[in-house]
Image (cartoon, rainbow, N blue to C red; front, side, top):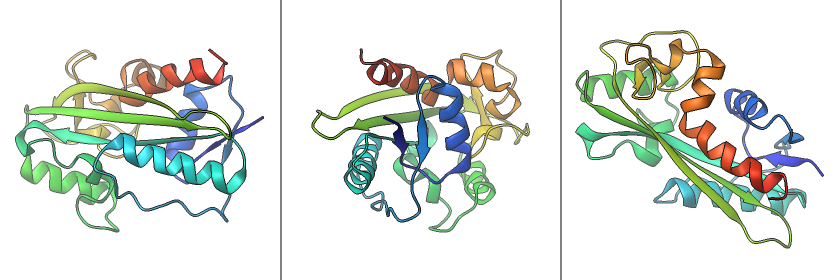
Length: 189
C-alpha cells in the first residue's frame, strides 16, 4: 500500500522521493486539510499531521516538521521557522529576518521530526538534527528555505546547504537522517 506524504510542499515531495526511493509515496490529496502547526515541538506537529492524513485517507501517512534553531536566538525560530517573518512569509523574507538577527559564524541547527501513522499500528517517530553555522551571506541555488544561509558542520566548512549536490545534502541533512530511520519502519523493520 502506498504511503501518503502529508505535505503540499513541492520541495519536500521531491526530497522525500529521493530519500525513500523504495517507498511508494503519494501526495496529500487536495481534499485533505492538515491541522495548523500549533505544537510546541517538531515531533508534536509531525504526529498531528500524520494522524490527520491517515485518518482522512485510511492509508498509512508520513509527515515531517522541521526548521532551524539559532544559538543567538535561544533556539528560535524553531517550530516557527516557516512563518518567522509572518504567517504568509516567503523563504526570502524568513532568511532576511534571520540574517538581521543572527551574526555570521554563529551556531545554527536544523531539526527534523518524521512521524509515521498507519491504521491499527502504534505511531513511530524519528528525530534528527544537523549542526552548522550562519553564512556571511546567502549562497547557492539548490535546496530551499534557509539552505543558502546554513553552512553544515559535516560539510567541507565552506559551502552552504544550497551549494551542495542533492546526494551530499541528503547524506548529512536533518531530513536525510530522520528519513533513513523511517525507511526501516517502511521496510517492515
